[in-house]
Image 1: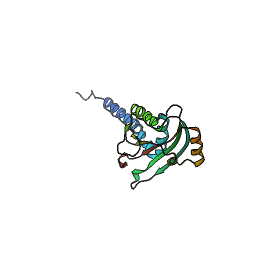
Image 2: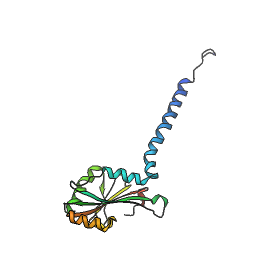
Image 3: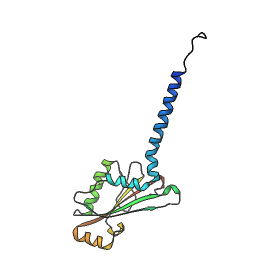
Length: 168
């Protein structure tokens, strides 16, 4: 190549610039998907509750939210307890969740005293209990539910920021 012919740095510079733009645009987007829930675990619970199946004819009677904190900062958990009333037997409620949750990517959690399922990422644990008092609902809500429905059940959804914190 003679001194009159110069190669333009344009193709290399263009590719590097394009790569930089792509990298700086996508990485925050991808990281943001998990960081949002890490910073706001209650939002993770809220979003997940919107997608959970509920047996036909079941009515939500009570809803309570809270946080629990473990020995490590990463063991912070957000939870929601809901009390439902239904005319199904409790065993039918459990069967409903056993049939529906695997279709949504949940797997049964072994070793717990009550029916429980983990989400695919193991960030979420869902439990179903026949103990309405465990929902934290006021006594008058529970009494009214017992007068109106054959079965009251508590659904508890917990989001653990670090899924390795589950001690099951």
